[in-house]
Length: 113
Image 1 (cartoon, helix red, strand yellow):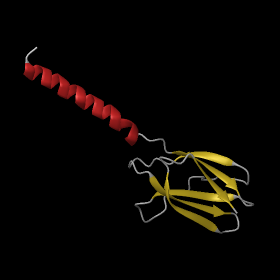
Image 2 (cartoon, rainbow, N blue to C red):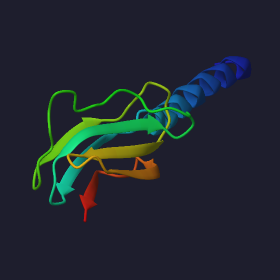
Image 3 (cartoon, rainbow, N blue to C red):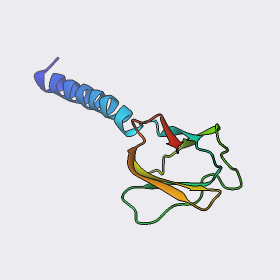
Image 4 (tube, one colour):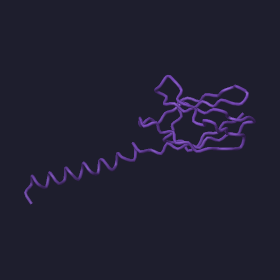
């Protein structure tokens, strides 16, 4: 096999290996279990990319996360971002915000009193 053809094959193989090595990093699992260990219901839950200035829609919708319950939420917004801000709104009107949670590395987040 001529040297130029060997270099082309090796270059193509290197490109394929690079794509395979990079793909898992961009396809990180962004599912996070939200656990309510407070004394009140979580009436609303928001998860917004830390790079934005506004909250997205209420992920729970008509559902409520009662004390002792949990829910698994896919936090992927399609941007590839890993850092998200969480906001839980409780039945007494109070809210709790946690900033810059790495959803690519965090499997669960627990709200406690």
